[in-house]
Image (cartoon, rainbow, N blue to C red; front, side, top):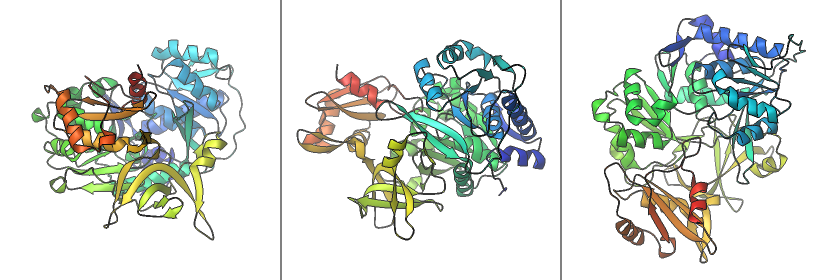
Length: 506
C-alpha cells in the first residue's frame, strides 16, 4: 500500500508512479493521475489567492463530472475541508449548509450560476466562486490576497457531509484526513483493489458511499468511472455503461441493483468483468440479489454496513447459492472496528450497536448537543470512545450480526410496540412487491404500508392485505396499504419515508 498522511497525497503519489494512468473517466473525457495532481495544485493556489486558509470550509456545488474529482482534491490540497452541496437541493437547504459551517468560497460551474448567485446573495460571507480549474466565476477577490498558512495535520478536517437530522436541521458529519484514510486502507485491503480495477462512482458526493469511489479507488491506482445523472435515471442505459466501461467493482444502495434487474434489460448485457458487487445503506432481500447475480458470472457479493459517522465497520461476503429468504446479515466486524452490543447499558447479544474505529468521525460540526448524545465511553483504564449507531442488531451463535431495525423506528400503536423495519422486510417477500415502506402517522397513530411492484405486475391490494394478515402479528397489520408507481427518494437514493408519513396524514 502507498504511504499517505493526507487524502490528497494519493494524487501526488500516483502522479509520480504512473502519471499517465487514468484516475477518473466521465463520458469520453479522462483525467490522468498526473492531471489530477496538477489540477489539485492549480485549484489550491487559486483558493489561497482568494483568501482560503488552512482549516476553512469550501463548498462543492457541481454536477457529476471530472470537476467533482478536481474540486475535492484541490480543496484538500489547499488545507481546507470540502463540503459537498447537493446540486438538486433547494436554495434554502444550500443556504443552511453554507451558514452552518461558515463557507466563504465555493467551487462550482458556470451553468449553475443562477443558483449559486442566489445562495451568495443570502450568505454575505460567501464571496468567492471558482471553477474547478481555479478560474473565478463569481466575485473572486482582486488582486490576490496573501495568506499566512498554518502547517497541516492529519487530524485536520478533510470533508463534512451534511445529512438531515431528526429535527429537520442538517447535521454535519466531520471526517479528518486520518479517519478518511483509515477507511480507505481497510476497504482497499478488504476488496483487494488493484490498478487494474475500474470502479463505478454511482453515489453523489453528498452521500458517504462516494468516498469509496473517490478515495479508495485512487489509493489503489485504479480508475473510477463517474456515472452521469442521465445514466443513473435510465437503468437500461446504465447497464450499457457498465458493459462498455468494463467495470470490475460496483458499489451502491440496493435500489440501484433492483432497478437494473427490473428495467435494465440485463439479458442483453455482458457483465463478466464485474468481480465485486458491494451494496449497503438499506437491507436487500436474497431473491433480489440472486436475480442480479444471474447476470454476473464472475462476481463476488458483499453486504457493507456502517453509518456515515463511522464509515464501513462490518461486512458479509456472500455465496448466492447458500442464501435463504431471511434478510441478509451485516456480517462480522472489519479488522479496524470494535463492535459492542448493549441492552440497557449491559453487554448482550441483542440490543443497540456501538462502534469504535479509527475511521470514526471527529464529531458533528459545531454541535455539542448532538455530540454529547452520539458518543459514550465504554470499558476501563482507559475507556474507549464509541459511536452510538441507533441500530438494533442481534448476534447469532456463529458471531454474525443481523440488523433488526432502527431504535427510532420502534413505535407504539394501540399499546403495542411495533418494528416498522420488520413490516417492510415481511411485505418485501411477497412476489409482487419490488420494495416496501412502512410508516406511522395520524392521531391516533396508524400503520401505513406503501409498495412498488416490478414492471408488468399488477399488484392486488386485497392479496397484499391477506399476505400481511398471514405473516404479521395482528397489531402490526397495516391500516393503510397502497400501491405506488414509484417512491419519492432522498438525495442519496433511499426511500423518503418522511414524505410518505406526511402523505398518510392527508
